[in-house]
Picture (cartoon, rainbow, N blue to C red):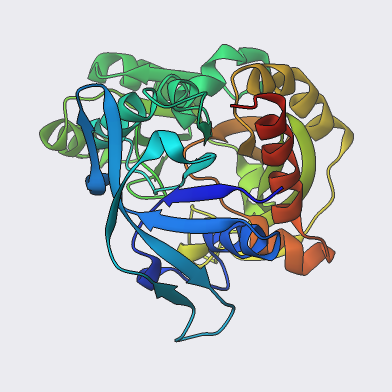
Length: 317
């Protein structure tokens, strides 16, 4: 089943071909005989109810320094595509939200993965709040008094932007930290958005586990261990990937959230688990495929494409 696939993502020339999950998905699509087109979110245009994008034919290869070839720009009606992969990285800002609204005009006739309405309604740090029994104590507020009371109750906490990504501006704040007031003021000067605070989980020193789910089922995991002196485990800030299985508690978490993910059309999702506690559900542009592939000798991108093809086949034009 050869499909016409458009990938809405960041510039292809800037991707790390040894780590980028979108690149792995593109390689697998090409292996299956699907034709690929690439475009940036800013290349979208909605005119009279029809969604267009200025796209380029894309060929990819696993060759550093020579990993892609793009054709000439061509303006196409995205309703003519079989699949659109929404794979641009956050921040989850108004530009990101607008892109989901635009893609709503073609989905589900053109299958958008992940479902744009569900992506818009499920920011990673908010969707977890619907599963409070699976999460550490969590507060979302812009009120410094609320945040101060939360710290007084729990002592060590983590504070981060509600719509942040990639470990940016994540702070571990202890009960005695004199920088608390200045930190809250800094956040409030930068944005009117609420902050998210969670009880600090000391188990993070042993790792923050990324579990990949496809159609709500766990298919692989990687443990990300933070560097010495670092509170964040994200690999681009020095976190070390380690081979990891999925234990009984983590399978319990996946079983609890899986039906919701599947029903909402969230085909490819990455969740973060620390010490048996769910901290994030990543639906915008999940990562982790290549690290798990290398450590476990699998091909998770194939599992993702199996699911996409099954969904596409179930909704013929």
